[in-house]
Amino acid sequence: MLVEKNVALQPYNSFGIQARALKLVRVHSQEALEEMVSGLAQEVGDAVPPLVLGGGSNLVITGDIKTLVIKVEIAGRRLLEEQEKGFVVEAGAGESWHDFVAWTLEQGCPGLENLALIPGSVGASPVQNIGAYGVELQDRFHSLDAVDLRTGRAFTLNAAQCGFGYRDSVFKHAPSGDKGLGLSGCAVITRVRFWLPRPWKPVLGYADLERKIAETGIQQPDARQIFDWVCAIRRAKLPDPAVIGNAGSFFKNPTVSVEQCADIIARDPKVVHYPMADGSIKLAAGWLIDACGWKGRGVGNAGVYDKQALVLVNRGGATGGEVMTLAKAIQTSVYERFGILLEPEPVVV
Image (cartoon, rainbow, N blue to C red; front, side, top):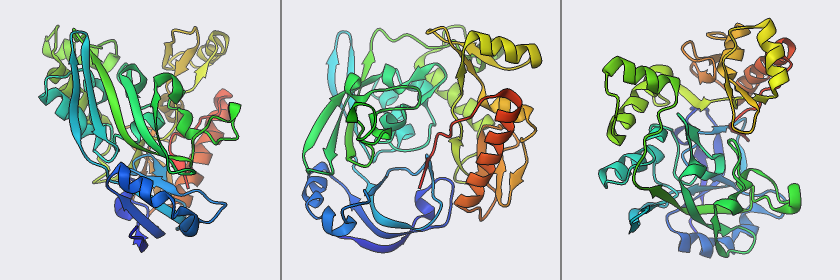
């Protein structure tokens, strides 16, 4: 196990925050990861688990990382099965998510097109249960392989075992959590598989996509057309992390009861809201933040993107502390006006 010392992390987090990893090891295969786990005790110590780093797109670093950083760089993409009812495709955890989505379309395996241009790695996708434009990862998930950092043993999880929720999974909960089943800090995902059903059916019930249909006159878009539309929509709304540091959507869209929503509508009739299958109502966090006057404002070098209030950005030289100070100020504003506490999406370390 080659451990790199004092590694700059600015290139490895999409916010572009300057920080250093005192110890970092790059993992290129599951077998190498299994072999290195036996040495983790010496590198990490007994108390603090390692930080697992993929694409760094859902991360706010607030200082130098003193524990071991495991940089997952496992590559590989393949079509595992082709059945009458669908395809099973697999990718290494270190693959770019967007590149993988594009590759599935090139292979004639549609189904992930609504999730195009989401930053980050394939390995991080089930951790966050990523989702966009009417599709969540759990809708297309098949299974994943991972290595237990406590034992060095490889294991496989299906969808039920991943405990998916809204931007949530078993990988975001500590083992001492509900039923002791959490895997946060205890496992590294190495490969992920997806089930893409056929015949393919487009998912179009989202306002932005419906606008594209109206604009273009294309009533029955194919998967490639939807992919292109999603890319165009995201590029128009969201800043490119390569140009302006950011972690995408910073807060989860909150859910409220019908009664709570009615109360908010009585005070703010224009609030953007969506009915959910379970009877709850999802509110647009970006609208709530914008309504509190935060769009374009900031704290120090951290700011709220002027085109989308849900995105916090690095205006140049922002620290993790500035980002979190801004986030907490936004939470306070939204809570004082609407009685809703916004929950951040990124991991804060």
